[in-house]
Length: 282
Image (cartoon, rainbow, N blue to C red):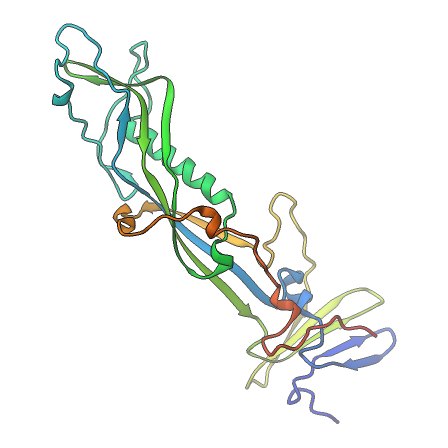
């Protein structure tokens, strides 16, 4: 008989008819059987890991209400706001216009605004330079405002701020993950019963004498949590911040210069040798 293992030929069998078809690894379309068929034999995804950075905070429309004992010269006022690596290192209390204490500090408001801006920017689904790996910086300035402004109590008065400008930016490290799940296999085999419809998978690693076999699980998709598809971008927003000084010597370019429709081709449509992977047919 023919040594199918040495020839790297997977088998597609039909229990009901007793027939057996031999197909080369490059032309047998069993890739959709891998892990229920998603994303396929070849996993090909983009990964973006992002951090937000913050420059010098600017308070717009700040004023000191005139009252007895209030600070006469605003230049004498100093706010010690320290946010280090995404964590508040200072505590600046806030009060409502009616004098009631706020549950949030100024630092917490700033961090909340930064995180919301970063998340919105990531949700835009940007893929830079057609997926070319690299480090990209995206300016995303934030303006914080609230009805009545921000009110900070002081020992001898108070400070009111209409808006707070946060010169923020995102640092995005973009990479591509491509994995051929069959590259270490001597052969891959799918056996389907047309009576029961059950499918079994068998494979042997290169250089091994052991064949592993198991039933093919049927993929059950959750409409609220769809499976990842090839070509999608996995985005991770880190809690830590980057030093915005990294952008000091960079020249900004319009976002449209690096954002354009992605010309993506699923690697499952062709193998790494350029041979087409076709649907197996009788």
